[in-house]
Image (cartoon, rainbow, N blue to C red; front, side, top):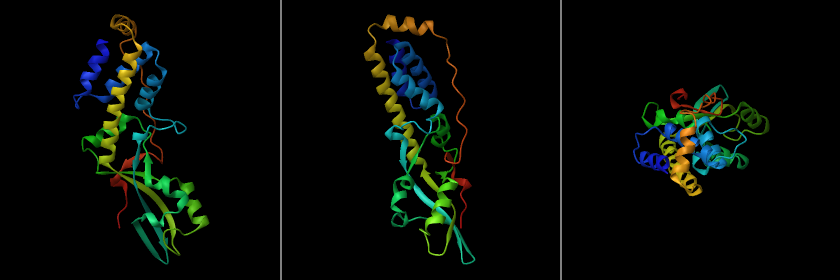
Length: 215
């Protein structure tokens, strides 16, 4: 299992490209016939579809913000206290589901963006809140809402992805009998597998916190 060992050794070097290691692991999974690891690596490389279950490490804590208007007053950015969030929204607003390809989060690890990330609420949610109630402040309607995620949470998510990659390698290695058989399968494959382009950012995807309006 020379390739498994090489990837495992590279994992201990935090400067090694995680994307490259995932691509190599995906090739190993195909050669091993391990559909679970192949699918997991594909999701990490290309993003998780909206209808796909997320690993626990890709669900991180978040803070809810709103922009309100009423009585000739506009509040540009108000942090929503937990006790002001409607019960049916608590779970959705208290956490964020990170579905983008893992490569999208790498710049945040290097400090190339602000310390917080922004995820906009769907417009349908804002409209529903305004139609049913004024949950955040009496006589004021919600113009928009968003969640912020601290960069540290993204760093922890990527670290957990590396840990999961180690488990995936162990799973592949356990399913193989001889290193020679594995190496023969790997050598017969193409040097590089095409990887689909990153998913386009949508309204629910992460954005730099610099986009957030301040009071």
